[in-house]
Each structure stands twice: as C-alpha cells, then as structure tokens.
Image: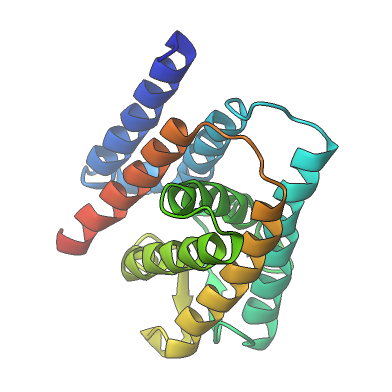
Length: 207
C-alpha cells in the first residue's frame, strides 16, 4: 500500500471519528454545518486515486451527477419519484432546492457501491443491480438520521415506500451507465469510504 493510500485512509477515518464525536458534543451544530466539507473531502480522496482523469472519466461521473440532480429536483419541487421532501440547511448551497453536494454524493455513492459490486460479479447487469441495491440499503440507514441532522425531511416525517423503489430504479440506471465506462478506481479507498459512511450512520441509529 502506497503512502498516498495510507494517508488518505487515515484522513477519512480521522474526519469520520471527529464527526461522530463532534456531533455528540455540545458543539454538534458547528460539526453538522461542516457536512459539505466532509463530503467534499471524501469525494476528493476518491478522485485523486482514480487511475486516469480524462473525458471518459468526467462523462462517467457526470451521469450520476446529473441524473441525481434531475430526479432530486423533481422530488423537492414537485413531490415526484421519491415523494414530498425538502432539504435542510446542513448540506450547503442549493440549486432549485437541491444541494450541490447531494449531486456530488450521487457520484461518490455510485463509485463506492460499484466497486463493491465488482468484487462480487463480473457481469454488467448483475453489478448494476447489486450497486443499486447497496445504494438503496445505505440510503435506508441514512434516512433515519437525516431529519435529526437537518439534511432533509419528508412531508409527514415518514419515509414513503416509493422513496426506496425510486432509489433502486434510478440507481440501477446510474450504475448501468457509469459501470459501462469501466473507470479504474482504487477499490481499497472505495471500501474505506463506504465503511466510514456505514459506521457513521449506523452508530446514530442507536444513539
């Protein structure tokens, strides 16, 4: 393992542990306001370990970005696909009600769940389905803490089943298109990003 990889993993977990402790501290509001920075750092760590950044890579990344933005915009403005919900203040700058970092998060989630799926199958459609399933399961965990952290909240404070149906369908399309490009990422880094997100939000299921 290279020094760059070791440093990146250390940085990821440093921010994860600091975030958990910070949110549990009296300064929780300050730490939650740093969520966009934390997401961006995780994204940068992923990107700097991509083997080659070229037009193909940017096109592959743009698919979940714009697909995420388009579907989220329909959701927050018209209650379509995911249900009626609104984003809070802690995810930063919004475009037509959709935080820019949510679109970045769509790229990040697609990359890390695609890399996990690739460890299980070599078949594109199977990998796309598995990636979509992993994304939806992770969303189900995050949904529990989202209102508490002022990330987003559904109308009536209850997540509708259509949210998860939309997630797996839209994620499948994102994965099918993204994985078609066979972007060479660092799977070790991806697994640490995925694990850090899972640990972070799972802990808050019980606290």
